[in-house]
Length: 367
Image 1: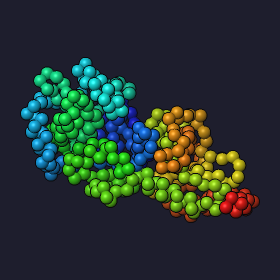
Image 2 (image 1 turned 90 degrees about the vertical axis):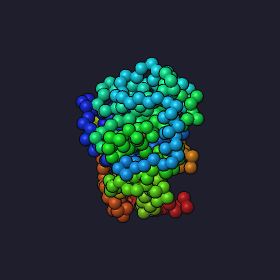
Image 3 (image 1 turned 180 degrees about the vertical axis):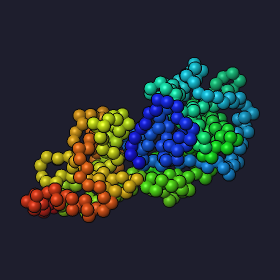
Image 4 (image 1 turned 45 degrees about the horizontal axis):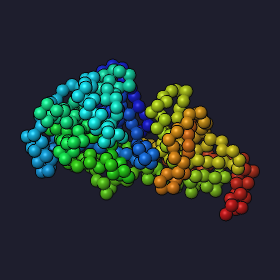
């Protein structure tokens, strides 16, 4: 699916949220977004999978039953509709931020009213108290048959009680009692294990992008979308390398710009990797190929600079792959196909015969 975010200004029906979640979208604030790649805090790029926990025949694992029983004896729990964050929530969030600055946001109200100060989702809150002291809370968005958990905050002094996992268990238990069918804990990444804790609760399903089907999740059988995209573009590079002057697979971290710049006049390139093409020697003319995981198709594009700049981009990834350093906009789609040979034909048609000959000569000189 394209990298995209949607904002709403009127309440979203529970069944509509169900549909978005089943189609691979996930809430952010009071909007929903899709992304098949993750640009992590270390500026590396990973593929991400949407996962969910079926609740119809769900039962807690022994260790989770034990954690629930122990914490239920010690703590008091409340459930309610989320509203503008009060001081006890803000104070706990500040304590959490001191220990985990990258795992929460200072403005908690984004979870409840979003960027445009409109509450459109049925956002609920779980609060956990030790006596009168708030020690943990979590937010989740409720549909008719689905729910999405989007934040869990706890007091660092209570870390030994596993309150982050505890609030997720509380959410699951509450939802199961109301016959909600699926619990969505967000995405995981086969190449980035920091999110692996989301898969511990029971047999999970993941959404296969190119079919739209939800399938049983098995870590040994699921490949990272970044690796798939890199492999497909490398295959195409080998098909076209002797036609063009130069072809190189690059990281494209600026796929995230599509979340921030949404305009009919600014159609930004999508995807975490690109195949950059020099058709003839000299200045690069904006030709590149992207690969869609959803359609399994290549797109030959004519692009241009946007004048936008990304200040955080590292020019080389941790694995040594070079990166394209700024966002590009699509001027023209020159071709779209699943067949690399057809991309080669399109390129042959774009390059004058003299240019192709010169290209071959240059290749010989370089090698």
